[in-house]
Image (cartoon, rainbow, N blue to C red; front, side):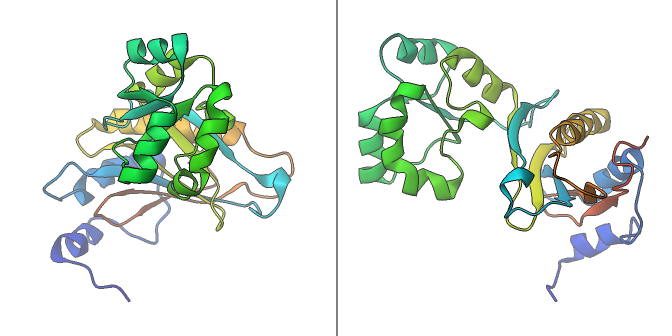
Length: 233
């Protein structure tokens, strides 16, 4: 069993870890568990009653949180010509094509958080598949990062866009804000994401869709939310 520090153990004393809380009560308790000296990220973890091995039970997409994530994201855009100019105007941190492929492969450069590309550039970006793929950085139409609407894509990322994807254990992990956020803003971000996950529920899903819902600060223990009523309704 992993050993935890005094702050973590003190946080555990502020709530019943076995209890399934209503969402608003859980967020009220959460503030007491974020005691690190830095502004901790608040994360949402959801376990879905799906089989990740089945193609018709995949859940993947992206959305813009109402109040953002509290984190500044650096954006790299692969585009040429007018689309490259559009990316620069939209506020992309880096814009390029083959030159960026060379910079990444030769200099092991990764000073970016999100990669966006126009469809015609995917042949170029594809050369980085083995490098970007394992890092979760490969552009994908499902998450809106392969698009001709570069302005919207960049603006969405800067506004607090997050990606969600079912992992091999049928879990989804998404940041929904910072510990410094007002409780209501965290709750609204949480609600928006839960509602999105409900909307994209695969038709092949059987039984109770959400098997587990938990929120936690970076360094704190998880607080369980009733998965049968994840919206508290």
